[in-house]
Length: 183
Image (cartoon, rainbow, N blue to C red; front, side, top):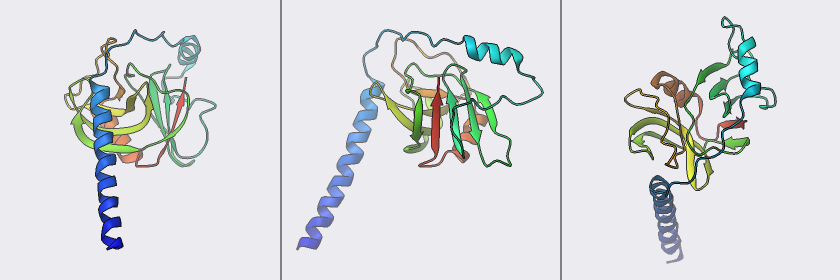
């Protein structure tokens, strides 16, 4: 009897965790608007971009760690997929969400192939790695390919990219992959 009871408890626990996760996601999608956050200062990234040779890829930000990782610069609105040392990192621009994770190191915690984003639009290749202000934060691509500025009156956590870049992110950032956020 103890064996079947523990199996039932484990099953109920798994269902409860899934329901709580789903409800948390739904709550973040309908959260009340908050005042817009202060703009991230961009003089340093802008200065480094001015010196950037367009024939060379953007350099991975200093202080972003080592090893295989995703690097996300909030100020530069850019992501780097950093593989092993023999590979040139892939880098592309993104459209940040209205909610930003703090600088630090995270791990990919969940992924979804296709869902509706917190802004109500269909998205694909969702790679979630953080929670900020009660909102799940992750990378995704709109299925219509658009990259509009997010509504500053809504709390959203979707860092949007093109569909092609979303494909690359999906292939690179699997569960537990390291994500480093820099200013």
